[in-house]
Length: 380
Ligand SMILES: Cc1cc2nc3c(=O)[nH]c(=O)nc-3n(C[C@H](O)[C@H](O)[C@H](O)COP(=O)(O)OP(=O)(O)OC[C@H]3O[C@@H](n4cnc5c(N)ncnc54)[C@H](O)[C@@H]3O)c2cc1C
Image 1: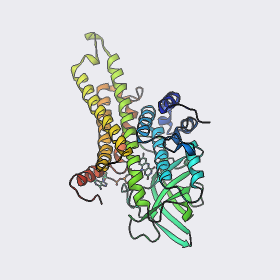
Image 2: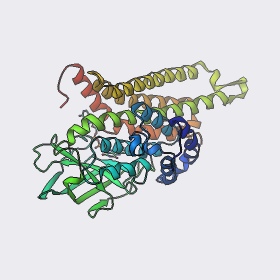
Image 3: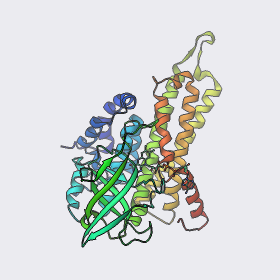
Image 4: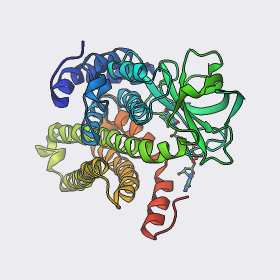
């Protein structure tokens, strides 16, 4: 049974074991089965689901705090957790007609692990634009054929929330989202993940050739684009930003600890006695702290949306992803050879933090979108 307590109290219980396994998860590129189970046992997989179906009833601010905490302990586990939470957000917003309540209850307890299968070979990081199409095979039934390029937890998630153009759709903005069981006939994971960071997250390409019904669809016919923009984009962007900053905060702290202790015996001083090192740290701290404040403010705006919320979301993900690259780079630099070596874990945080920028929408795309929003232009 899930434990009780605040988000922080539950995190305090699970993070020590997640942190202590992180180096091995990275070294072995091992999917964090026990860590995900610990999150399930603590109730944290149901973080943002309503309490009446067994969730914790948390909102955007709780999501941000939880993901910063988990990422600071283990990047891989935080990515698996992020994709599950993103899947729960969109499923709760528009539960599938068949067994939607049962699916939500399972996602809340962790009886089922969720993920998103949006990115496709054909539209790359433009996740909102599936080129695959669901074909109608009869009244109420469709087949979905799609090459999904990156599916986190590909071999471990029980349900993939998958996108495709709607059967009668004339373009990607007329898309559907479907809950696809991983064990459905026609789901084939194609190859293993081998990336520089988040090495245990099992983000693999997946071929989908599955028979579905309209009861597997989330929301209205052709309503998938709206769900991706109104639900997935804000929740995923907040969570992805939190992962970036959690990784950066741990890298910076490890660097501070190192330079405070590393001695220059011939000078009877430490690395922290060097003004250059201290200035690097101070600039990184200011950069990181400013982006943490921005992220927390954007989480509040997603909970209480106004006309500026979309712009805030777009620029927050881009800004936090880029800040994480700068901060982890600084951590590597000030730690010198100890940063390059694996024993401090700084290089792992730096490698893991490379993912935020490339995860869709990429920072480059987001800066363009944010610029469009600033200039009063349509995003698409
Ligand atoms: C660890 C990891 C886990 C992932 N997990 C999932 C998952 O669970 N589910 C899922 O659906 N996807 C997932 N993805 C995919 C991710 O969201 C992106 O779709 C993918 O990383 C994009 O890679 P790409 O090579 O297709 O990028 P490309 O689209 O080929 O981008 C290449 C370059 O072009 C730039 N570019 C592209 N479009 C624009 C634009 N409009 N304006 C300016 N520049 C642009 C990019 O910024 C980038 O520099 C994951 C990715 C990673 C790395």
